[in-house]
Length: 92
Image (cartoon, rainbow, N blue to C red; front, side, top):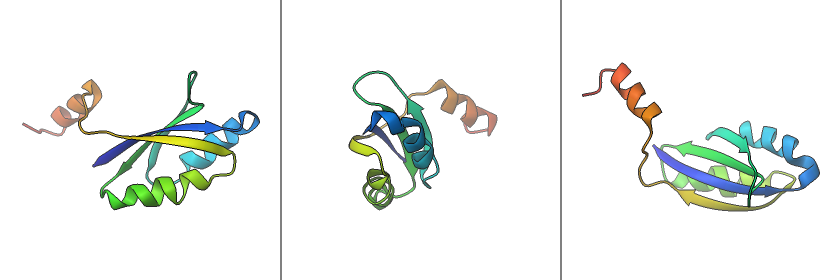
């Protein structure tokens, strides 16, 4: 699984609609409305590297109201949630 964290800037008066539209894109697992340098953060999870282009460049960046993005590709995940899920599946 390849994970990308996408920081999204959007037209301020359209943030809720932009977030909902992005959340409906296949490959986007979560969208967060945040304070700080970005208006939204989307978590993109795909099985192949090539799919990042399909999700981010071809779909997410073209959502009406998106004014800019910055994509960060995760190398490794450190998450208690993921560890607990693995143990519940019986992963050794």
